[in-house]
Image 1 (cartoon, rainbow, N blue to C red):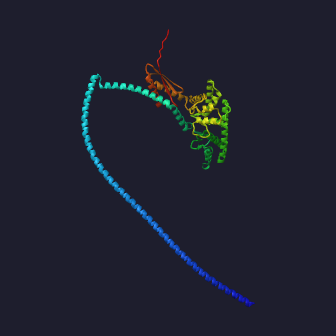
Image 2 (image 1 turned 180 degrees about the vertical axis):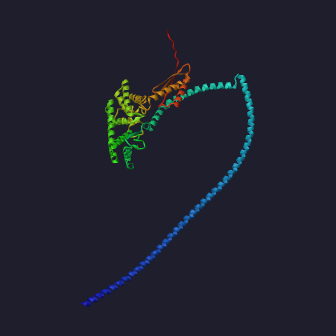
Image 3 (image 1 turned 120 degrees about the vertical axis):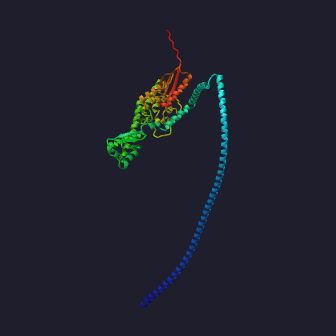
Length: 511
């Protein structure tokens, strides 16, 4: 048994050794074959790389040769151009020398001709003097006297023709250009927002002490940035003592910013979250006040059935001014004037009052469309179901659309009365009276003027002249001269009409 085990172990060991030798031999042969294959692949790769390098070298060589050829061609072309320029310069130099010689010859010729002309001129002067003396003996007048008479006759004729020509031009301009000029002026004024630029665009907020300025600004300016972002108003904190300036063209936003600042300063808690909360609260309060103002205005004027949106827009007029005149007060005044005028003419005063109140509703829209305020107001009235005659009166009060009812001219006239009366807008009574006196005194300074009257709030000047001092033709030139002098020397709104009146009166008494 032991011998069997020994034999078995010996056989196993011998088998294992034989297997190891076989495996070693196989691995060695496999290694040698793999090595040979790797060497072959390396040779192939080496050859490929050499070929690629050669190809790149050839490509680069050809590219360099092309560039050198191109540069040589450019240099050759530049040399050719330089040679051509040199040839042209030489030709120009030869031509200039030739022209210079020609000019010298022409100068010599001109000098000889000038001498000849001077001699001819002396001969002509002698002949002219003889002819003048001959004409003076025939006419019995000297040359100076004849010249003065001719100038006087030509002046009179030129004045008459100029006056008639000026009148023709003015009449033609009035007939053809009056309507278009009105449209262009109105559209230009409304498009550049003159009203917005003239009205006050800042509000001054007073504070008790300058310490509050630091709290309003906040750490690194976060409070003031939050306030500007919430209100849309620029807040100017400068060295002005105990004052902060709120700057913005929207008066409603300025009012919201003012009230919000007041509440924040009173409360003492100023931080971004609190600012946003207070601004939203104040905005709601202002909106409620706007609606309440619109309702109160409609009730005071006895106007019923207005759309809620129109009532809100009427309330917004409280925060808008036109040339310094509060828009809501202007609308109320226009409405009352329309009612009075409609009553005198036998028309419906309620309709007229309604149209007068709504005539400037287009000045306070929520957005900013590119439309005149009269057209925009008419569209708003149409949108909120107002009657056609009221819509037309709103749209036609600046002649943008054609008038279709008697309400339209009433609204137009009452709007002008409310806006043009003394004291309505930014013109104090003293300045107004001084302008009227200046108009009258300017016209009185002309000879032959007897009396002057400034009427229609200074928009017309009546000039009465003496019939024995000024002729009918001179009245036309006088009105033109006065108009030109007023235009050059005075400042006034709109236009001034100058009317010169010449009349002959025969007075007798029966005793």
